[in-house]
Amino acid sequence: MGAMALVARKQPVQPRARATVEAILSAAAGILEKDGPTRLTTNAVAAQAGVSIGSLYQYFPNKQALTAALIERSSGSLEKSVAQAGRDAKTMLFEAGLRVLVRSLVRHRLDRPALEHTLAFEERRLPLEDGAAKRATAVMRAFLEQHRGRLWVSDLNAAADDVLSMTRSLTEAAARRGERNVEVIEQRIVRALRGFLCR
Amino acid sequence: MGAMALVARKQPVQPRARATVEAILSAAAGILEKDGPTRLTTNAVAAQAGVSIGSLYQYFPNKQALTAALIERSSGSLEKSVAQAGRDAKTMLFEAGLRVLVRSLVRHRLDRPALEHTLAFEERRLPLEDGAAKRATAVMRAFLEQHRGRLWVSDLNAAADDVLSMTRSLTEAAARRGERNVEVIEQRIVRALRGFLCR
DNA sequence: ACCTGAACACCGTTCAAGT
DNA sequence: ACCTGAACACCGTTCAAGT
Image: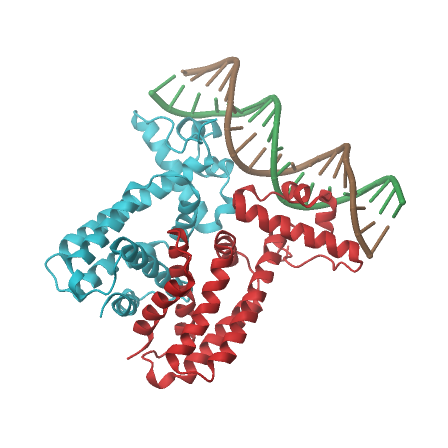
């Protein structure tokens, strides 16, 4: 029994192996982005990466572990940029700080909308402890705490969660309509968030 | 070639056949809700519905058509309740009307959160012309139009789209945290929407 | 340490045969 | 008109054999 393993089975140590893992991950990302989860087959990934199916299973114990690795990679890069935005926001007034934080979220999502949308969906289904995603929420929470005085909300954790949800869904809705202007989207989201949080 | 068929292959005419289709659909909904899309296999659906796999394929040309049917069913019932809310809202002040509309959306989503979440995700991937979902958006658009004077927005279609997105994501976030109090959730969403739309 | 590809169980889908 | 289940191609995963 035991929960299914979702972490990499073994770390690549030689450069050749690192290249293999890299090729597998970017092939998976490409397929997920272009054709969606249905077409993400381990055989297709191995073929597109130019390695044998056996090599794939040497580093990933199963297909879900592949997706999990993509999620970790994505939320890792998100965490980085949100953390930086959080540091910048510390010395700013509420609205400017909020805008900087929102910008980092919008940029991340708008970078590869189709891929990020799928990953976000899978993230909720996979039993992974996504440390990076949690830390991104914590940054938002810390920002809200700093401005608690002007906020309406009682539960800061829930509020940070809601802020990320709203930002995600508004970014996605905009991307779906074909909007690409980060500033316009960002301004709209900040307005929605201000209405939600303040007063 | 040609796009994959997503509509029912043939309509059941005899009562026995209608019962078969009904059993298939509710088995599919149950599996999707309980175990998620990965476990939704045609064999599992047929087994749980108590019919042979051949019977399933008599009414649904492929697995996606099954999901498409669930989506149609869900957005059909959503449309109904949103349309009613829209009629009620017509004679109300802005805020009360908005609340009534939001309530119908929240209720629908909170009814079977896991199922609706999966269906919403699949809906974006499937090339279906979802008339009911579009009509639900149109109801919201009409409501916004009625109160255009007090709104900030320029593009009413985009605004209606955003309102539905925000409502969905905030409802989902709340459901994920275990919240079940419709009034509390509804009030929070209305506040966010007011901030987003007005001024 | 790393890679390969045949092999097996299972899933989507079809079809010939039934009532 | 409706139902059945064996059959086939394909996908996830393993494993014995290689460098």
